[in-house]
Length: 154
Image (cartoon, rainbow, N blue to C red; front, side, top):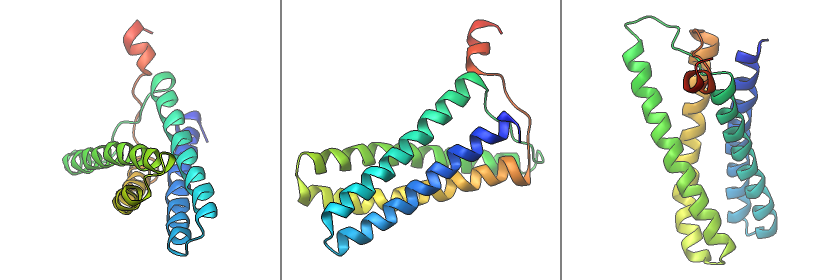
């Protein structure tokens, strides 16, 4: 396994883990096991943050992966990817908001935001894993240059 596939595999695993932890945390909240809920949700947030750090680092130092499938499928993939990016951005903002509300002990708002945030995050994780499967398993593509090379002529 090369660096081009190792880092995406690791980062995608963190996104899948974060969704699993959010599901467990949501269940714990329903059962009113709030201390366990807090710990599991913080672990889910840490897992999502680890994904983000790995993803950004890979983009900067290694580069991203180009679409490797047919030209006929590429427009559908790009629409799907755009949908995933929008979901991930919304999910991240909602996640930060939901965590902030919890830390500020505004639990009524936290519960309302948390329900929506969790659903958005589940779809983000599902679409993120799907992007990984498309790029690295079904249609392995080429690789773009690292951002540093693009910026500084490497």
